[in-house]
Amino acid sequence: MKIAFTKTFIRNYRKLSREIQKTVDKQLETLLINPKHPSLNVKKINDPRKIWEGRVTASYRFTFHIHEDIYLMRQVGTPVFRTGTPKRVSCF
Image 1 (spheres, rainbow, N blue to C red):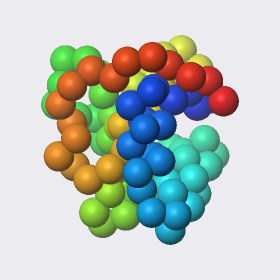
Image 2 (image 1 turned 120 degrees about the vertical axis):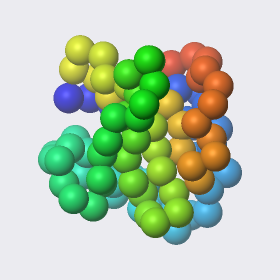
Image 3 (image 1 turned 30 degrees about the vertical axis):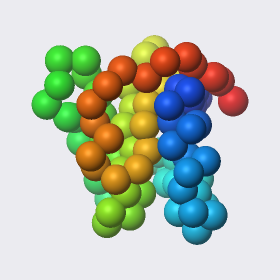
């Protein structure tokens, strides 16, 4: 699997503290290695767009969509961000 980032994810990521950014990075590495790892608490959101949510910390989450062999990272932050459609996609 690979990870791609929406413009919204990147913008939200840059607003996070360095400490939370490091935790996000660690959790994304964990997602690539073992998406069922208990620290991620990955679950499907009740949404017709087939969006998934993973845990960064007790207060922070990330959302993503799975397309073929790519995790498309949509948003990151506190759980109030779930609405809206992200714009462009960047692959790293």
